Image (cartoon, rainbow, N blue to C red):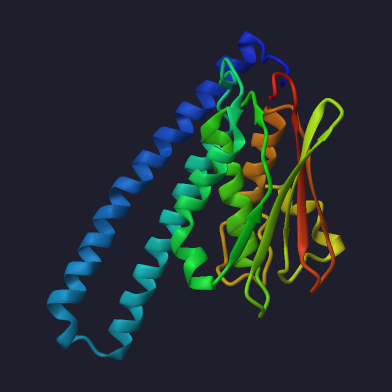
Length: 237
């Protein structure tokens, strides 16, 4: 189990999280107004627009989408900072994984991806955070896929006082020089099908560390990637 935060640390993190959550709320409210206004403008005036006006309106929609994706990523990052205590008893990691798979159903279906996993343990942790952890790692594998249909394998093995998880894919891989920086905020890589915000792996790092573990990647260009993370085995079944 991860070390307990001091009272001062918990207060500081909660204040930061409250500020971030409030900022996200105030960011998304006017964003919805812009999106709605642009949609109404497009529906009611499209036949009066020339090509330049349509191109500008398209840029508005794309900008709204990018900012909305940023807000969603920041909300996930805020959640990853939450100094909650793990559950009072072991929770099934497979349920957290299934929650992640449910949110990615459309992307999995559209890419024709195959996702396999072996038996996963029960351990003390925060269900919501573990679900986000799997969602970010799986989404990353789907975004950085190669020409072949994506194949993703999830394994878990006991390693002393920890569980060692591995998520392997057959994607485009990550050059060695980038493998340290990808876990830093806003350090997304080029080459993905969808250019992300660059917070997904930073969120993963925060969640894993909050659960007393570490995360790293093993990858070769054009040979796929394996993201490995450990979680404390205290209280596992």
